[in-house]
Image 1 (cartoon, rainbow, N blue to C red):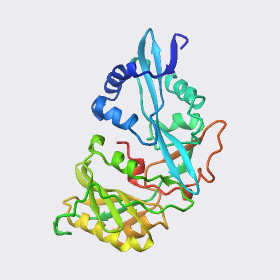
Image 2 (cartoon, helix red, strand yellow; image 1 turned 90 degrees about the vertical axis):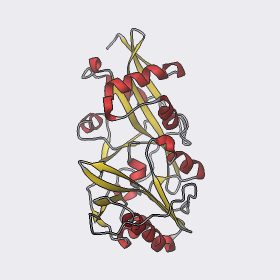
Image 3 (cartoon, rainbow, N blue to C red; image 1 turned 60 degrees about the horizontal axis):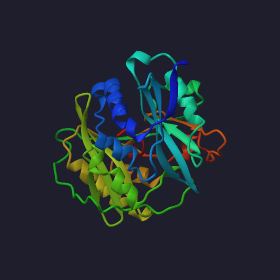
Image 4 (tube, one colour; image 1 turned 120 degrees about the vertical axis):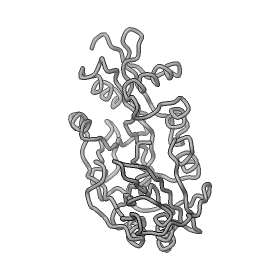
Length: 306
């Protein structure tokens, strides 16, 4: 490994990094320059720090930490490891771990928390580097299926976001007009649909998973607790307008989102969601309770790897 150097990525590295990502990840995702710039440069929470590993002037690895911002009783700056790639010829040589350790020592000074949702294959590597498992957020499911619902159009109102009021002690994504314009932009490559009322907004998408059509509720926003019935009505409308086999969402217990889902006929399946893991940042004070699932208030839109 002595012949490999690690340094911060420069703008001139972008094309080579994109080529490496496409080579390493194949058909899993298309890393166009336009998509990369939207995701990592236009993010309202800040540009994504990136390190590259170089061997004989050729980039053989890249480690990216996407900026994120949580809100609880205070604002918490965080990062999420995403889009990490190592050239196939350099795998299993410890490059992933070396890039990660370097990142832990060079994160922006305001970052206090690292979080992500690794799969079964990558989780052991994170555990060795000090990541801790928080738990699995609850999934909510509602069967739809042929004949269970009558197809009906859903009101579409993109560009009419309803921002939830501030407050609460659980960690949730900090919301703003700038965030909504960025997060749900067509630049994400995902075809989100939006249904809005006077005090609530529901965002969802449809896709095929394992040969089955799925309606995914990615985001529910309400101004106040009295908005729950309206949000539930929007959810029922989304279900009626879908030809999917089932609908799925993620919501923390005892939240407005969970109440709206329950009112709309969704059933919770505790501890069935993706594995949420976290790590504190050396020299920074992590938010209280960050290692307990009950301290988090997340939805699909906060966790999906767009």
